[in-house]
Image 1: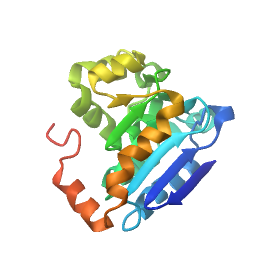
Image 2: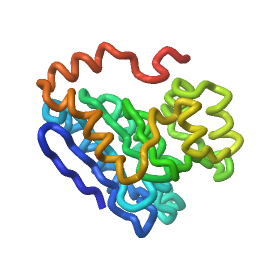
Image 3: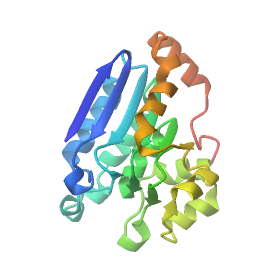
Length: 210
């Protein structure tokens, strides 16, 4: 359910469960975290995308009811993505929802298709978001808009997400991976330690927030 392609310093990770809207099981989350940690010293660019027309609907519903919604594996994944010493890109091929926000917010760059929607219905479901998500989200779009998503349950369309700064660019579905590979080009040709040193010089999103 997780596909990994490695070529010329670029690792492309695909959530491949389109029949379930790429909803995430604990096993998938653990595999994603392991890939992010393994990227150190090898990958220059780490890309996350999804199969089909949805990036991810968040937690698998059956596993969420059994406790996955509050499992620490979500935070381990987002922290592993954030700590990866390479350029990380979320290629959002469709809607991003719920806990799947964590890995996207932890990426350096987010590219989305026009059809994508963004929502995180934790208030409605009676859960708290994973701890780092509000900080990273507020670092991108500010506290008020973060509360609109997390507390007021608002569903944000792609064009509004771009204006807010939640995503960095919108491109057509058929140009998504071409755009991502173009963004990856400079970093993939450099030594891994050079990429890591440059990334270390740039503050993480939300790092200046309390």
